[in-house]
Image 1: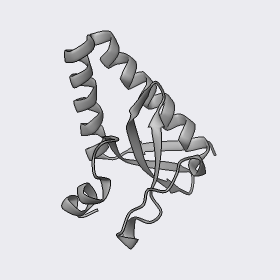
Image 2: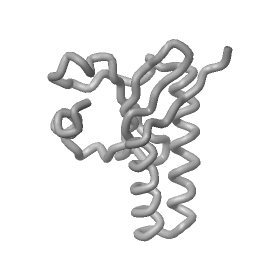
Image 3: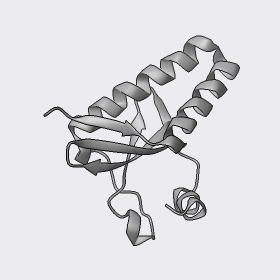
Image 4: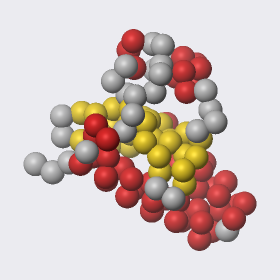
Length: 108
């Protein structure tokens, strides 16, 4: 069985927002490059789910979540959960965001 990744709905929305912002600010090619880099990063972490780091989150329900940077877009982080055969992509967020507060607001 090969490793897989599943992009959760909020993460899918995050991808769209980041790509749109980058396309508006730097051009369509950069927005497209971001999407390609994101999916390449998702594929990589699906094969090696432990490679990311644990964020310092206070809520025990999210203690298994990990973070990893999007290749080439170092300020954008993938918040993911390792699962049996890969990873679930929970969110794609800018590194300046307060992850703990974001997850609390959303009830994750």
